[in-house]
Image: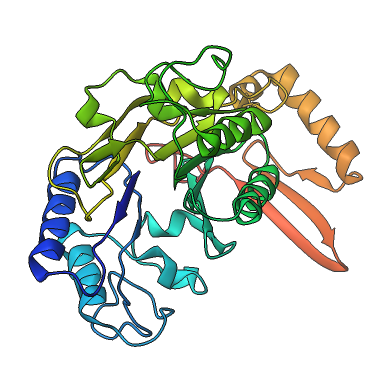
Length: 347
């Protein structure tokens, strides 16, 4: 899963092309058999309709396509991907196998969006969020956490959940007293906004994934501005699924925007196949037992009883069966002809 933030419309073309070049390198480095989900603010409109682009997007975009939206479509074509949002109302028209795994795309608010996937029988919910800045009103910040609470509480406990968001807070270095929901490898000291992240993780029984992996600082810092560097973007998952995550880091290179850097998380879904009980296993019919005359006669008697005596044995080679199905009489005749070398009279 990748989280990106594209340069704004007014930024230089060179900066935009650098962003897409980085995305190209990241996707090309992933084995073709692995699943890939990109959740990003691309700052562009792919537009309504999909004429000429049916293989990479659906018909349900918004407004007219602009240059930045065309860059999204061109990237999807290069990487053989699909713009999931645009397929939402017409799943039966999906051409890409992975897109068919998308069950729901839900825009909760301007700051929260969720995506539900089914991958080999495993339900995966990806939630994207963008928290208010440090200087915003407390009421606005609490509204974001209230929305996230409702989203997570609405997801069944047996389903996987991954949250990728710019929380605009510092959870801090170290985890004394918070060992159950975060590791030791945060950045700088915790602030009020970072405490809100930790409190949310406690309420929802989740873990702050970034902080469990010991990386060089350049692989942990997600935000750079004016000579300052810190960690404000986080990935969270349910604590019970933390063992399924093998890595979480920043993509080293130029910033994908003036301030934020791209973050990636590698997760292996553990699919538990349920063993069938003995009662669920289909019993094989042991037809070979009918070779014994005693067993064969017993089978005939039971069949006559079950069908009301409508079975007639004509000879060793011919048998007839009469059934009444919804007032329609059906006669079934079974026969076994002599082999090729037998006498003509027998045939």
